[in-house]
Image (cartoon, rainbow, N blue to C red):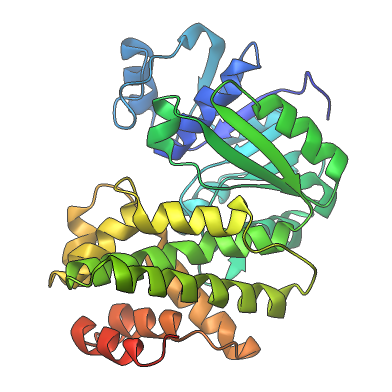
Length: 331
């Protein structure tokens, strides 16, 4: 990998679109894989994503679109995956190329269902990608604010600090600041778990709990994240850094947060299925709740918020009763 390595974005949603905007600042051109050819055709015709972040205009002469995942792998050195985690395996089933020599960057803030694996582990285990060739893109960075070029901060996690630094330079722009970390597991688990706590914040908002309680909820949430990360990957980390606490805060409080919106609907009385149908985007926290709950059967970390959200989403427990019980467990 070097400064002229060809970057590809895989995914057609809002986060993929924001990443493409960032990547094009310091690259002459990028490759971009989307599943649907009709979306690509419309994108080229309009010079913007027809479905997401429609305010961003792209110079499509600098983008090589394809709906063939094998072609994008053949023609790229760095693959940035921004596909919702529930659909990742569906896309990869079509893959017939070797990924072992590629640099994989996961911008997926979710866990691969069934395997209950974070995405970096999944690529290492199933596609023979070496740890030093896998990176995680993390931090408080809503796609909508990237689209508006509001100052945002990204953390690039990788076992190789040198490679992380190279990607950080490629992603450093006038509206994005970058930093690096070697705590790839910690920031990836944190990126997954903050979606669960965002759903919790939304449920409490829907139930008309106020800002005072929300502050207590989120301060307990970061402690749960810290305990789980320490159990799964014990090393020295500052849980107050943007990749952990910052990402949790923006996801729990922002009006752009789809997980908070999903939780708010649950708190207002929507069923899980109805809330999912009415949302136009995937709430990763729904899937993350089940995965983290099942993973924790092994680690037995004290996580009353995760347990409460699991019971609400998967055991059809009453949000009113579960949150009332939760208030007695928070400190």
